[in-house]
Image 1 (cartoon, rainbow over the protein chains, first blue to last red):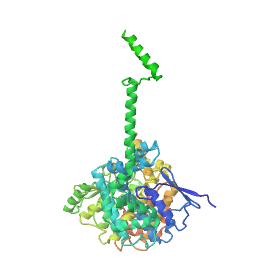
Image 2: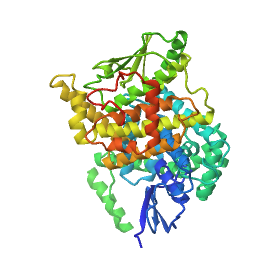
Image 3: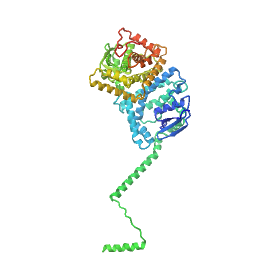
Image 4: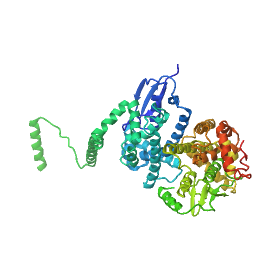
Amino acid sequence: MAAPSELFCWKSGLGLPSVNTDCLIVLVVQFESKHRHMLASLEHRSKFTRFRTPGEAPQKYNADYDLSAKEGADTLAFISLLEERLLPALIYALWIDPKNYVEVTRRWHGENMSFPFNFFLPGRMQNRQLERLRLIRGNDTLEAGEETEKELYHDALECLNLLSQRLGSNKFFFGDSPSSLDAYVFGHIAPLLKIRLPNCRLQQSLKNLDNLNTFCSNILNLYFPSESDEGSSHPVSGVQQSDDADNQPYKRRKQLLSVLVAVAAMLSYALLTGIVAIEHVHEEPVGRTSLRGSSHDEEEEV
Amino acid sequence: MSLAAEAFVSQIAAAEPWPENATLYQPLKEDQILLSDSASSLAVQTFLRMCGLPVEVSCRANAEYMSPSGKVPFIHVGNQVVSELGPIVQFTKAKGHALSDGLDDVQRAEMKAYMELVNNMLLTAELYIQWCDDSTSAEISRPRYSSPYSWPLNHVLAYQKQWEVRRKMNAIGWSGKSLEQVYEDVSQCCQALSQRLGTQPFFFNKQPTELDALVFGHLFTILTTQLTNDELAEKVKSYTNLLSFCHRIEQTYFKEPEREGQSSRHSKGALP
C-alpha cells in the first residue's frame, strides 16, 4: 500500500478553485484521471489547500488513455502554443499591469498570507514574474507600458482565436471526454475569464469568444461545482457592491484602529511633555478637609 | 518587432517585388556557427527555396550583433532587415509569396501550434544541450562561439552567452532537468511530429508549408552535426518517416552536387 501523497495547491479565491494556473491544471487532471483517487481530506492553510490522496501520485497524462496518437501529438503542440503565446499575456495581466497588480493580485495575496510575509512576498513574486516574462520574450528591457501590453495581447488574442477555431462547437477539444489539453487550456483561460481585472482589454476580447466561455463554464461546473456556485452569485450582486461589502468590516476596523492609535499617541505625548498634568487629590473625610483647607488658605495669605 | 514597426515594414514590403540581391546573414559556417543557429538558418533558407525566392548566404562573425532582434539568421532585402522565421514568413507574405494560403482555419491553427512545438521543445533542447551541458559547452560551444575573437574577449563573450542561456532555462523551468530528460523530451517531440506526418509527403496536403521548412531545418541539422555523443541524432533516427521526409526535402530543394551550407567541420556533411 503506497503512502498517501499530498498535493499542495494555492487555495481558492477570486471565483476560482485555485488562483494559480499550474495548480488549476493539476487539479483538473487529477479529477479527470481514470484512476480517480478519493480526496480524503481537505485542509485550508493560510495560503495552501492541501489535498491528501491515498495511493500513487497522479501521472501527467493519466487523462489521455483514450486519445489516438495524432491527438496526443496535437496535445503537445497546442500546449506549446499556449505557453509561448498566452502565458506571457496572462503573467502581464495579473502581475505586471500596475492597476491590476495593486487592486487584485497584491491585495489577494496580502490578505491571504500571514504576518509578516504579506508585506514583502507579493513584491518579491512580482519581481520574479517580471524577470520570467523578460526571459521568455527575450527582451531584457520589457516594462509595463502601452506598447508591451499591445504586443502581448495581440499574440495572446491570436492564440485564443486559434484555440477557438480548433475547438469549434465541440464540448471538449477531443470529442466528448476531457483530456489533459482541456486541463491546460482551462488553467490558462479560467483566470482571464473569472478574475475581475479592472484593466484588461484581453478579457473583453476573450468574452466575445463564446465557445471558449462555454468550455470554461463546463469544466467549472463539472469538476468544481462549489466554486461555480460562488462565482455565479457574484455577478448578481454587482462588482462594486461586492467589493465594498467584503472590505467594509475591514475598512471600519482599520479606521477605528488608526483613530485610537492616533489619540493614544497624542495623549501620551501630552502627558510626557507636561502639557497636561494629572494631579492626584487624596480624598479625606469631609469635615476635617474643609477646616484644613480654610486654615491652609489663611496661613498662605499671611 | 513591435506592432507598429511590423505594420510599417509590411506596408513598405508590399510596394516592391523581391530583388535579386537579397542576402541572408549567419555566423561563420566553418568555425563559429552552433547547432541551434545552424538549424534556424537552414529553416529560413529552405523556406525561401520553397517559395522560389533567390537569396545569397553570407557568413559574418558578428551576424548576431547585426541582427535587429539579436537572433540569427536575418535577411537583408532591398532596404529592409528582417530576422527570425516568423517575421520573415510575414514579410514574404506581404510581398505576395505565401505557402500556407491553401490551408483552412483549423489547419492553420494546427500549423502554428506545431511550429510553436518545434520552437518550444526542439530549439530549447538544442540550446540546453549546447550551453547547459558542461562537457558540450566546454568542448564545443564556448570554443566555437568565441573563435573569431582574441583573448580576453573570447572568454568574456562565451561566458556571457552561456550565462544568458542558463538564465533563460531557469526562467522556463528547464534548469532542473537532467540531460536524459531533455533527450526524452526531444524523443516525445519527434514522436508527435512523426505521428502528425504519418505517411504523407508533407505535413499538410501535398504542398510544403513553413512548418515543413522549420522541421527540416532542425532535424537535418541534428542529424548532420557532430556533438560529444550521438544520442540526439539517434533519437531522431528512430523515426523512419522523419528520416525519409528529410531525404525528400533535401533531394527536392538542395539537389546541387556541391551542397552549400552543409559541409563544415562541425557537420558530418551527408544524411545517414
